Length: 134
Image (cartoon, rainbow, N blue to C red; front, side, top):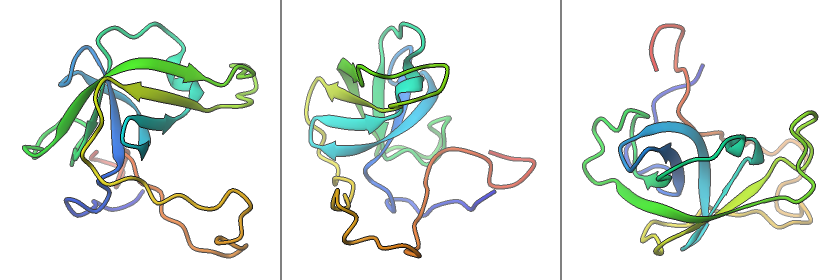
């Protein structure tokens, strides 16, 4: 479940696409530096040709996204201890061919000092908003 986000609410939300800038979305991520996207390691179980990251997408199909930015991925760095069986260390960083002009994801301090227990969080991505539509 969930609800549709307003256009521009999550400018750092990345749509990972295979087969070119208008290919299928297969995972999501977050822009953490102008040329780097944080994502899950399990997204790269197979070789991906012509992989792009798109920002500013309203729908996974690309509909309504005339201001989207599409950048080719030049390198994938998956955690060296990643394990597909248990999904340990399920993290990867993507290097983009060129820097993005989009706003960076707001990052929390690693020690947890600015997000104590009980802090409300928001999760964003391209999934179901009800039982019938995407």
